[in-house]
Image (tube, rainbow, N blue to C red; front, side, top):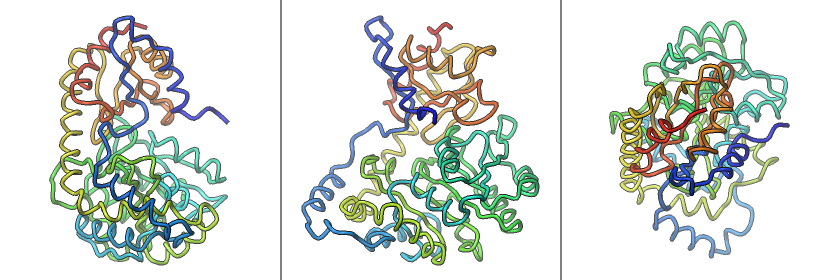
Length: 383
C-alpha cells in the first residue's frame, strides 16, 4: 500500500529552509481551517466532556439532539422536508462515505467517481473491494460533470452509485442546482444512487439565502439520493471527528447496521457540543465564509505575478492550478516547490488520470496576506 498523500507531501515540506530568504512555509496541502475554533464550541465541548452521562455508548444513529439540530439546519438551507430520522451521525465525512458505500453498494459492486476525484474516496472503495469507474470532468467542462457525459458513462459502466463532491475537491468547482437536478434524474432513470459530499458547502459565497440545490425537494429523493457532510471545516474542529449522512429513513436504518460494526457511535461529547453550537454560530460561520472568499480573491489577485502558471478552477477552499512545466509531472513539481520556495501543494496526479499538469492548493489554510504572496513565490521558482 502506498504512503497516504498528506504524510508524503508533509515530508517534502520538512526539507524547506525558511532561512534561505523565501519566507515562512505556506502549507496549502491538507485543507484545514486557518482560524481558531469558536469560543462557543470550545465552551460547549468543555461542558460536555465533564458530563459523565456521555461516557457510555450512545445511540448508533447519533445523539438525538444533534440529529434534530442538523435536520433543522438542512430544512432551512435546502428548503426541504428533513427530519431527525433522515440523519445519521458518523465519525467524520470519510466514515460517512464508507458507510454509504457499504450500505448502498457493498463488496463486488461498482461506484462511479469523477476524474479528477477525491483520492480518499478511491482508496476507501479499493479497500472495501468495490470497483471504480469514472466520468471525465476536465477544463473543457469547467471541471464539472456534464449530464450528457454522466448518462453515457452510467449506461456504459452501470455502477450502483455515482459519487460527486461539491464544492469539488480538488478543483473547487461548485455545481449549480440545475446540473444537480439533471444528474439526479439521470441516476434515478438508471437505478443508480447519487451520493453527494458537501463538506465545503458552508463556504459557497454565491446567491446567499437560496438553496444550493433542489435534490431533497425532488419527489422520491429518499430512494435515490444521499448527502454527506463534515462538521470539521465549517466549525474549525476536524479533531472532533463528526460528520453526517442525510438519507431516506430506510437507508439510515440499514446504515446503522454498518456503523454498529465500525465504531458503534460517533464521539458523544463532540456531538453534544456541536448540537448546542449550530444555531448560535450561524453568524460566526457567515463571517468565516466571507473571510475565505476574501482569501481566495487575494490569492487570485496575487497570482498575476506567476507568469506561465494558471488558475483553471477555484471555489470554496481550493484552487486548481496548471503548472508551466509541460515535460514534468506535478508530483516532481510539487516536491521541488515545497523544498525550494516553501509552497506546499498536492499534485493533481494524486487525484486521477491525466492530472499531471495540475496541483491543488488549499487557499483557505492561510490568511489573505499570505494567500496574496503565493504568486510571487511561484514566480521565483525554477525547476
